[in-house]
Length: 348
Image (cartoon, rainbow, N blue to C red; front, side):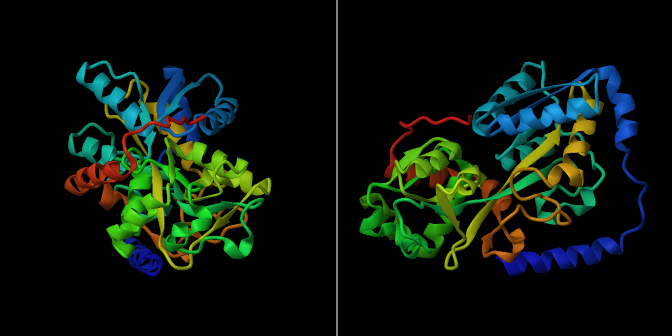
């Protein structure tokens, strides 16, 4: 919960203050000198590639001579490609930025990640990073409610998961497939924990729609094809600025928080370039325009929002995702309600 999370941050900060001083991380200039010889950095990223491509252009302007190659897509597809490369001993990627935090937990256990603490590592929220530096969150995202402003009056805007059971929203609510998307699975888990599986039965009876990916969810609500969702990631924010939809932080339910986690592989072909990019990405300047909430506690929230910890949030995503038996059980049960993936979405 938000207050418990905030209390953990305070206690952790006190504990860290008592630790002995350690030498500072390598500066960007020092890393750049080492990275020049490698000429490029390659990474895979879950979600839309466009934000990372735009960020890569800025990086290449600041660090000429180092080409950034990024592949975007679904985390639960790209991770399989990395596993294949590892198995065939032909790793072609330096690092990964994925929603599937459980991959990084496993890769660390297998000794496949480099231990690296970039400058600013101490400012990352404690439960958003591995204490040894094997992986860390690059951004945090919240799954809020959102509704189409042209078809739903503000007084009818949903305030709890129970509101999505109303006739007003019959056949007009959209989410990702919970069995297919980890963050959405966490979202449904949080709701069912509070309201029971009877809620899921009633929700299904209200004929919701499902699609792959949070960007198609955002587009559907913005166009009015569907009029509401409780599965709105930062993909909806641009449509919010355009006035096509509005975001609601539930005053009744916990809003699930999930992260984009990153790590450098131990056998990365361009390790210094990867360290340079990760350090640059985690710097305050880049984190202030990351497109969602920063994983750093010293970076202000996006315009129009309060600090993440001031909302009523569910913030145990990593702990949830590493519970393999629970995840397997939930996926199977959720697919029983939604059926297999039919509406295939995308990340562009």
